Image (cartoon, one colour):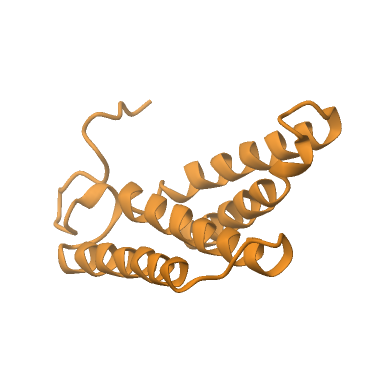
Length: 130
């Protein structure tokens, strides 16, 4: 379920960022409200996703997929230039996310980085349970 929340968060973030230019510096009320609602929905879904995923990995995926998607949308639909340095940079972002995921998997994965040991805490110690 956490992965589904993360996918939804990414979709809202991509949609909001794609239309941020239509706000004309947040001077157009309707586009501004829609963009802010999109970001609000994205962060709400991201918060749900990190209940079951490591925050570092979830945020890395959220930001990397969003960055790559916006760069591609910009090149395909918004008249931004496509260049080799841009593609190399996108490749490095993707490679970084892969390394984070592999690192997480090799150290037990799970929420908060805790290994799956009996009695091990399931989340960060700085969060108070209600």
